[in-house]
Length: 443
Image (tube, rainbow, N blue to C red; front, side, top):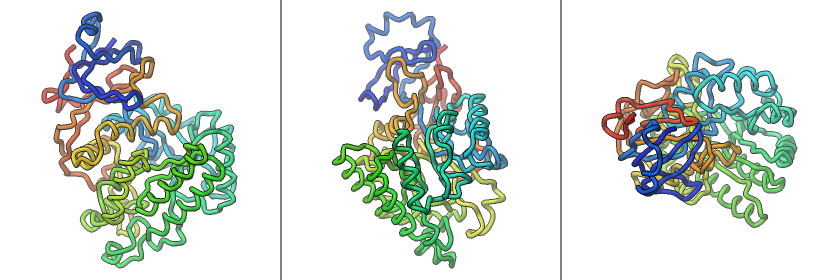
């Protein structure tokens, strides 16, 4: 047994935010205990005990947009190093994207990923692709891939340009009652990806990626989702117009009796603007690109009012050699698992734009619900997957657990440090640097 004492327990699924203790038995949540008399009745001497005084205790974080690059690109990341990075960041469950090599359009690759994930302390899930080879033309055998363990479908990294193919896919996932997550960038509009068309692209003397590339795809795909009733997740939204389109689609869905429209934002899109590319170069190059301050503010507003219901990292490792290339040749993407919670606390909670319980809901409860995962809650009988963190602790980003270090936040001092990550009642990460300063293990 384990007893986590004296922390501020946050459980959005049950509307809990209070000082309490959590009793764990056999890897499950046994009870949330909120008074001293009840605590005294427990045989606490037989428990492993963690004093979480000064810390917050919440359901383990859930990231539904992660690239572990395995198989095919393991010089950037593999499932083992990706899992270590996730656990260090307070994540207990992740959903991997399917653009590996080979892509996850077949049961062999899917099984390889899931079996390798089981050998880590992290709960590793995976999407399969919507189309074979991510070519955007022929649908995969969705029923078979679901039977073999896929939790949803995505061609992330590539948009599905053929509207007829997408309509067939959304009708299929609507019948299967699983989500499809879409990368919304039309390459017909893009001269150079990863950099916003505007002053930043002009600085580099390139055409860049205009906002229209995202807007037109979001508008089309929301309409098809409303017509089919499919569970649709708009990935890594970057434009104010995209946020407005999702807000309106959610309103229309509610009128139809649906709750099928979802959207995710990344920590880098709510933290940075295109100015970061001028400062950090390729380390701030990503798809979709960082855009203007008005877009960043619209994303924050979307997170506040629930238009954007999920925060996902789009953890995208690349090697130092790859990122050292020119702005047009370097790959897009940054790592994010180890900094996501702190960026949320630093740039949303500490700026009074989002309460801590809503941040946890967006990073744990809502993403778990989207993919139907047994996570994101401290309900009795739920898996004892938790994160214990000190929201007031400062730390400097660096020395990543990830195999890659492509982050514009390296060297930044952030607030909010993970003290413990617990999976199925087992401590799988402990921040020894913070042990004496905040929450600490008693026995």
